[in-house]
Image (cartoon, rainbow, N blue to C red; front, side, top):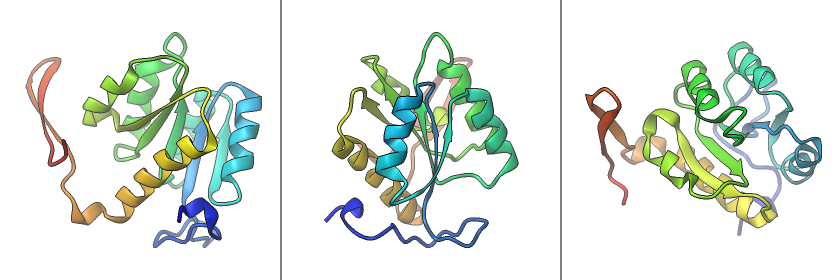
Length: 165
């Protein structure tokens, strides 16, 4: 049974107002997409929506870091610079990219960016559910499994050691 088929997700984490629901920050520049995401996620998670990347970055700096961040990938507008800014503010924050572009799975190879999944738009709620569940399960098991380690060998190049294939 999926988390979404049960009552709101209970976790060992607590946010500022004492709720034990997972916090998810969502950035997408399209209001209809944000409204759709709110409708499917809000019953199960503590969500905050951002139409502007700058607002997301301010919130990350001013509030407790969420458990997960969903980011609309807009290569021409945000792209890698936004991911780098997110990781500068919250270095361990896992990110799921929401995108219409193909071939972004290669971004998952860099532990520095913390991209843990790529969900293609348009997506089904079940596809998003799977991606979110995988990341929240990973959070719950964090101390029990080895994560990827990036070892710089020169500027712009590194080895990645991981227990996962």
